[in-house]
Length: 187
Image (cartoon, rainbow, N blue to C red):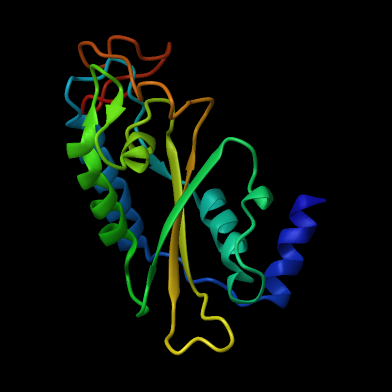
């Protein structure tokens, strides 16, 4: 039923833009770099991959943003969304993720506390999260005096909780699931 609704939304609403193959690679590389450089090191960090399924979900999520706004309840369970509005269209995915990655400075792993806003950083370094998908759409509402483009990335949480520490401290890859190998300090 949910897939039928998403299909109808795509047909009736404006279709959101999706990253190019190069942008997808840049998104994954940024997240891989961030996750391999966590301090203290992570023993259970999964390697992030780009998900065309999450990309489609992000596209559907943004399809009617200018008329009805965003409805977080339309997202599947275990998906974390975050985004940012820009006044111009463009490849904002890596810019947005880089901006949120800089919130690392506000996070104290030992105390599991933020001195500023760092929830998105914790999502980006959540060990159980291993998939991301992004989209962008013109979300200008009638009567707005300027265009507004919303860029959104969705992360598959895989049971992770942003209220807890995002990963286990320890030697890289020592707590990988069975059958996984270590690549760039990630399982």
